[in-house]
Length: 70
Image (tube, rainbow, N blue to C red):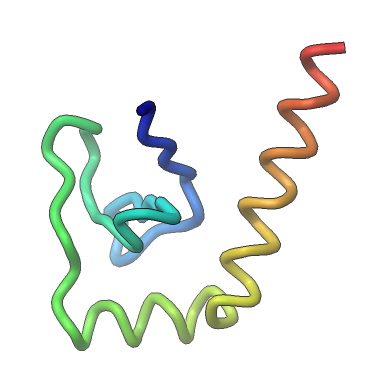
């Protein structure tokens, strides 16, 4: 099954990706993603508006993808 990662923000200039299966991941290359530490995770959630904010970003990506396919 294809793993979907969505770019949801940045943590101190490092891109933050979110996957519904893996959660938050940090890294500038998709093949070198790492899980953030506990404190990093809390700061990322705070900066992005919690899970509600992250889900909204992911939802907007999915809507955009549907529009592009039409």
